[in-house]
Image 1 (cartoon, rainbow, N blue to C red):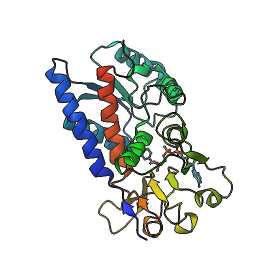
Image 2: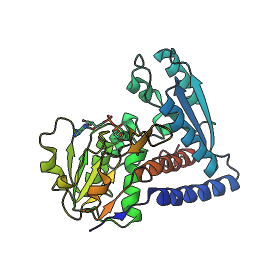
Image 3: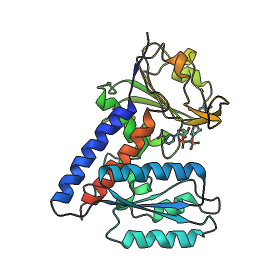
Length: 296
Ligand code: NAD
């Protein structure tokens, strides 16, 4: 068996095209374009790339955006003050604070300062809590993007055994919630694994659907999965590669070449989940502008 490839670039473009159309209609009705405020603290190279990708995607779908770049010496109090101003500003629909933050700034103090109605990343405890009780909310973009991939390819999730490797607040945990809720789209029997899990293979081998978000290059090998498994590789890892101009290449958490021979469906890295994350951010920003989730 050789797996069918889940083409995240293609699906992300479809999501973006639909957002673009909705933005056009929204503006044609006399509304201003949605506006996303990005906050970047410091000069972490990866964060600069990520915020650049997001603002480029905004422009592509007609969302206005601005990136406020702050020195990494800023205090938590000052940063929170700036966010409170954005909360009050009616021309700002969505607020995104790029992580990581400098170590002297507690991330969740900052996330909780964002008005949950503008929390387009879906990280605020209000949105996380509402997700776990099936209430309308901003859903974390990466797992929401994975659910969109299942939908697009008509990959059944209901009643399957889903195994999520990784339990972070931004990917693994909300992914497990989305997969497992019996009153929303998931309805899968769901196992969550993390770095304290004993014998990872004992769990992954039983997965009908395996979502891996551990940040460990090639953690999942062919002998750890069963025939026909659906594999979603969220991981993005830089590994040294002298043959590449940059000196590195990107690989996922799954050993793609060996696992694809056993899987029924698999996402590549790059070109799988990554583009979906950005597309879902566009969708969330439009929802924020339209106040669809939290009407006034
Ligand atoms: P994180 O470091 O916050 O969390 C990693 C999780 O994996 C933790 O729960 C940890 O316990 C678990 N883990 C680590 N090693 C493990 C092991 N050997 N066995 C089992 N569990 C293990 O990372 P994150 O922010 O959730 O990101 C995970 C990966 O996904 C990273 O490679 C990151 O770059 C990538 N990522 C990709 C996207 C995207 O859009 N594709 C978005 C966010 C994160």
